[in-house]
Length: 492
Ligand SMILES: NC(=O)c1ccc[n+]([C@@H]2O[C@H](COP(=O)([O-])OP(=O)(O)OC[C@H]3O[C@@H](n4cnc5c(N)ncnc54)[C@H](O)[C@@H]3O)[C@@H](O)[C@H]2O)c1
Image (cartoon, rainbow, N blue to C red):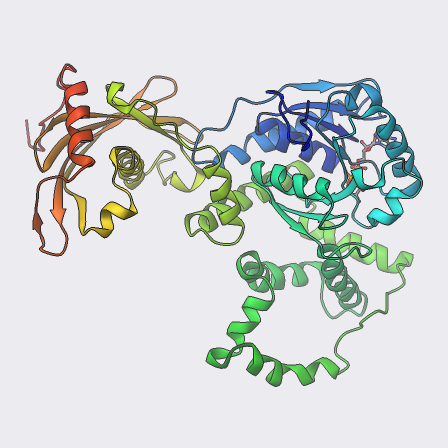
């Protein structure tokens, strides 16, 4: 159900995915892992295993990018007809093959079956909304939402169909809630933006192979060891701005602009994809990557993407900012913190980059997850930016971590915190790290001091920390002293 503004009012959000290939499967995974129910229809009755494979890849990767708990995975329903899939759907994503006639037939059927408020989006890589809408009963309802493969990991979606179109505006909000980065195109254009850029590079690469200047592997190495790494975080213009040095973009354009007129590139010429060129590309590609199956390549791609995205997220940069915003839409719920004994608001998933040469979670990550739990507790009792701006904060002056068992890749660690004692300026606390399977992997005992940062000395807590920490200490007073508290390192 949607209200008159087109906002979804039902508790269960339903996405219909029409066409369950590489892209449809990726969309289904993105919606499911964000808690949506997904109706999927594919005219090929054998499509289900392909979709399940994509979903398995997504389950192994997307959750590694979330720092707050994801909603429970939605229900996947395989539908026998397009109409059944469209019924009750709030978002309908067409991902059938890139043939205009097939797509238009699908849209005609969808507009008959779908709610008038449902967003009907096409994954098309090349067609414009004008082409897709021709003859449609409600043209504005059909928009382009062009993703990139793998849809469950790459955030960007090109939205085309008129910046003022209310369906586009709603689509942008809904996509951001899925951890995606909608970019609304200012005008429609064949092949949108990303594929245009890619095609220019692709055309040039085909010439280089055809003319024997480079092999497929040479070209890929130049991308993966060079500008591909830069592009993942700064794109084209920001990178070139730096290339101009302190004098910036104007200087860059003055220095390298004239070279654009030199006959370096093949520009619009397209090499003839004759049998000889096809054989050459295929055999070079087989030599380069033939020892790996497509599934293995997909898993390597996803593992690496997760690593890049984690770094970007840590720095709140580029695609990492979209992930940060995604987390912020699922804030931890502090609830009545004083009633929580112990205080338990933080869980962390053991990520690939946390695993050391022993094959389990490396030691400094334990301090990280405990520090994150501390930050959540402190934020809950009122240590926010305004508090710190008054010149007061909380410093940790001592930590004792015990490592009790190994946490392994993908395990969920729940960190609960007990206030052992607190006075007017000190908190003695205890973190227990337990996996979702109930295995206690580490404990951390800490002493915090409240400080006057300008004076460089301790000082009593100020409101609201003063009252809230006292309330928490009272709530925890009945808890037994944790086993191991007060331990120090020493020979037996
Ligand atoms: N592959 C990519 O990297 C990529 C990236 C972005 C966008 N796209 C676009 O996404 C769309 C789908 O591409 P793909 O690569 O997933 O193709 P695909 O061939 O992998 O999948 C298409 C699926 O649609 C099904 N299908 C065919 N006709 C149908 C119909 N009438 N009703 C329901 N299902 C039908 C097929 O059985 C198949 O499973 C295309 O428009 C493409 O341009 C592809």
